[in-house]
Every structure is written in structure tokens, then in C-alpha cells.
Amino acid sequence: MNDINDLAAISDGPEPELPEGFIDRHPERGYADAELLSYFFKVTPRQIRSLAASGVLPRETDGPFKGKWKIMPTMDRWVEYKTAPPSAKSERLAAAQLRLMDRRIVREDLELMEMSDVLETIDTIAAAMLAGLDEAAAQSIAIVADPARAQLACANARENLVDQFAEQRAALIAGPKIKRARS
Image 1 (cartoon, rainbow, N blue to C red):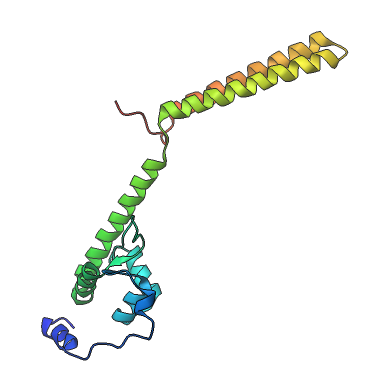
Image 2: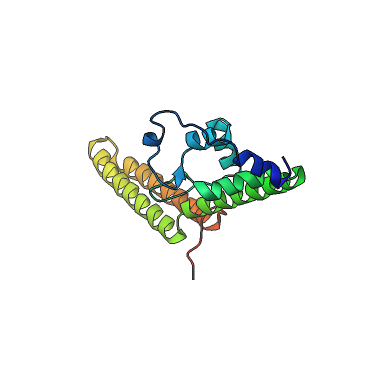
């Protein structure tokens, strides 16, 4: 089916009959789901979703029609996909996979926290834990037989915790996965 006349011959045939109630299940004008596209393209809905995942048939990513396909651009892409020579399909698939990877990178970048937010959160957690440790130390010193020894053990535990938080904070600052605040 590499000739445009072949496509014209297909379109001259009778219009396909839709199953009863089909339009009622697809009221969005200009948009289609995988079921409707699979009906027209004579493939399974799973194949439609697979082509979407590979970037051949991109679908809406936001708004009220998220996850649906615009019918006319999708029809154009389908014709291009079906009529393209094998090498063009491979190039297009590779380009679509690159676009998909770029989108994943952008999404992951958006999921990262700003460094100042991370450090503020770490400092808040550390302060809360140290305050709890100080309170526990005060209570335990009052009930033990050797308060001086208990006080020393609590002070050592607190100092170790402060050191660990400082190390973790420094690792966060140096770490590759934290996005720096933009200047």
C-alpha cells in the first residue's frame, strides 16, 4: 500500500457501519479513545496504545481530553505510519522514543525539589528529633540510679545524631539528583 491511489481506492468503498450505541459511548467531537480508533484502523485497542507509547500516535497529555486522540491529526499520522517505507518507520520510531525519553527527563526534573527546600526540611526534621532526644534525656536522667552517666550517654547520642545529620546534609548538597535553585 505504498501508492496514494491505493488509499483513494480504500476511501471510495462503503462507509463502515458502527455498532449500535457506539456513538453514544463516544460523545466527544473531534476526539477518540483507543476503542474507536481500533475500530476504524482495524487493529486492537492494545495496538493503538502501543503505537501511542512509542510516539507514533501521540495523545492529549492534559485537559479534559487527556488520554484521548485528536481524530484528524491521528488519522494523518496513521496514514504516514502505514505508507512510510520501512527505514522511515525505524527513524520515526527512534525519534519518537527520543521524544518519550525527553518527556520522562523533564517529568523527573519537575519532580526534584529545590536545594533550599530540601535543606530547610532536613533542618526542621533534625531540630524536631534533637528536641525529642533532649526531652527523653531529661526524663531518663530523673529515673536512673546514676544521673551523671545517663546525662553523658544522652549527650553522646545527641552529638552523634548531630554529626549524622551534618554528614547527610553535606551529601545532599553535593549529590547529583538535587536540582539547584535558579539564580
